[in-house]
Length: 223
Image 1: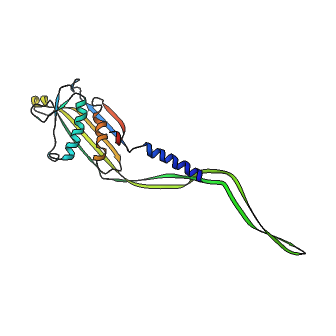
Image 2: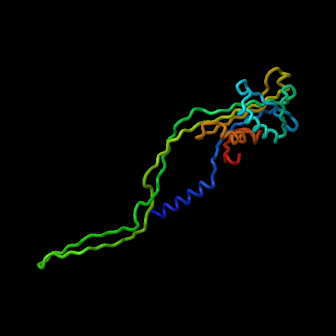
């Protein structure tokens, strides 16, 4: 039993030491055919809603998004009248849901060292005789499932939705012309969007032109 427990502890130590919290993001991107092939030199401005105006959290997420857009040639500006494009995004989390998970517990199921002792009696014409005995036996230990562990946790769904609009065409045509759209979602025990925001933003904006759906895994300390 001690050997088995030592093995489990060693494996657990390696696992914990080598793994940071991971965020799995489900991403959907929809780039329009009118999205310019070359974004170099084009400018963009953020379009916050009335509720987002003045929010420090919103500005923090906007700065993170701007970092990825600038890597692809765009330049952020605060001048709405001269910006080539406009970026709008929303984010948040849903109410939690309870999940219950069961996992097997492993341990020694048999074998090992056993100890026996007792007193023996003998009866005869001369009376009764008795004596004590003791001994140990050893058989190869066996291991397997010895029980079940049940864990209950609350899981939250976090989301990020974003759009890019061609502002110059929008002015000419007198309506918003959307040239890119991205949606993402992740689930986890964090009840706030902020702790996983960098990973989710990276998942959506790092490959701006990549259309379709995919799952993106990232460790929090690498986002």
